[in-house]
Image (tube, rainbow, N blue to C red; front, top):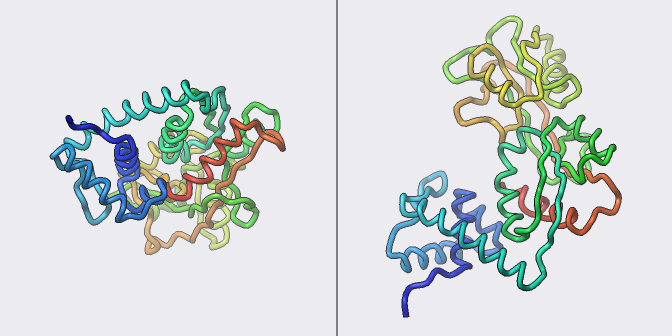
Length: 284
């Protein structure tokens, strides 16, 4: 009998590749870390090739692991599509999902890939906008559900909490400028309000050098070294840095991430996507 690739092993491998940490992957698939580690060893034995490189900060894919990931994702997609089609158990339809720019960049790839594996016939249309605009779209039934940020004190049904942080460009000292140049979202967004309130509370002079809902625009100005931005900690790009407390900027609050629906009783399709988000988002 020839070699074969077990679907469960491939599914576990893809989760490890996505999370880059055995502990997070184990939490996602409901296994212990030691059981998941044994699965990965078994897969490496089947292929007689190293797939993962353990590091102090998690795991990296070897070149062989990167090649397997491409095949594994295609195999799982075909497997799940066939199962959904032949059993009639897969959901189908379209979901209109609202999400702020920073969460879309960090969380959305993982959330959509995972949901697509379970429900390959579902189409998720994504609308990116700041929380105040998303709430307006929820009210107008332009989206079915939205992932939103709320001030921590006002947040109910919180799925995850994220600290807001000051963000600057490595090797520059924009935090020392007077007045402090800021790159912020629109006036009614949490980062804008939190930045101004915290600076006002300590009497620090500032000016808003750039205001936009575009995450790309904000980070571009920070990369130029001409301004400081406020982002959720998870959304800080790898080439930018969190401004240290030693720079003298006042602390910022945390925000709560929650879901809002356009109706009290969402459809089974929307409810399934919401449940998927609730289960996956805390571990990302």
